[in-house]
Length: 430
Image (cartoon, rainbow, N blue to C red):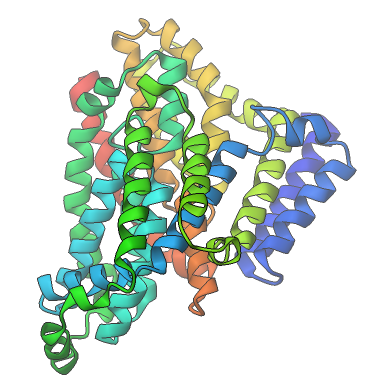
């Protein structure tokens, strides 16, 4: 690698260390790292702001912005309070049952929508129900972020890396259902078991609080029924457009912005109230992170690492699959899995062709998808859903540190990737 490539690695590792140790605010670390990358010419304005391969992913930014506005309007209707009471009553106030219900809902919704949208919708409910039952909210939020990344792996539209993989590999929605979804169901069963162990200290049952919840009428929580129906109608249209993306060909970001604009224009909600719930620090953090990772792509660092893995496994499909699975998991824990997959997919396409095309070699696409999707759980910055959840938590006065998230996420990532290993071997390689 060139001197500039090594320098960009040093800048990235320095910024990452500051994010991990929380010596300075993560937004300042990301923006500072991005600024230095531009200063040393590891990237430039064109590559950082306009390139689809190495720039800020504006589709992700505007998807988040649009959905945050919609959620901000929904919050004013009382619907989240309604859902919180409903969830607490369905589980009779038992903390573990509540977590199971919330993570199953999160994983299922993430398979149909995208995982970022799902956590934006489920997080407000979680805050309210935990407040009602006097439960610590952080374990529930972390569990939901992890579940969203597992559930999102099941379908083409569930996680942004899957969309990139489908485009590069010529894979259909049904391909993901056949090859990814069955294993995701098994992973969710294992994850529920892990939740029982990892978050056991949070499962403190308060019978008095539970009894109070059982007496509440959730319908009384609805503050504005007209606004609720208007919001649900717009949200329904947005969700339908997400699912029909292969037919309509509107990017999720476009759908989210159109939905947010329609909701603000068609209701009595003021613009100020509509944007009050937008997590601006989270959006800015993503921008800085995209620029830093883009600089690593631009200087050839990520491509070099990827090619080394490919060269080491040439002609050995089994070894290539395992290396790709675990290397993708490891790298997706460090850099956001979206730019990683965008960089790695052309290399995997070549490797697939060298190993029998989309016949025998197709297993490499599933190794990349599982590795990137599940590896994103390992750290607080590995996946978009993780960053969003941490931003929401900070905004609501319950900050989640990098290491608090990572000490749970790393275990879940390692266990789930370990379970996928024999699945890929027995189904495709044996």
